[in-house]
Length: 58
Ligand SMILES: [Zn+2]
Image (cartoon, rainbow, N blue to C red; front, side):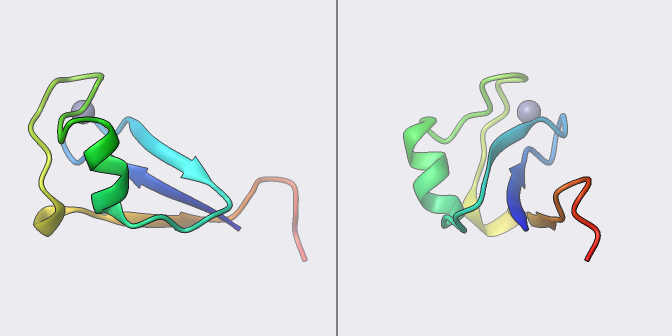
């Protein structure tokens, strides 16, 4: 399983990896802004998507 945190505005992936990180930690590193579209990000309207890695069908 990979965890992905995506920007609600442009859909770009802000974090993806095997460790589940808190959105706040990820956003803090990025200065609470999306590096792609520049939208201001807030943790209360954040979506954490959990995605399965392609190719691992068990
Ligand atoms: Zn964005």
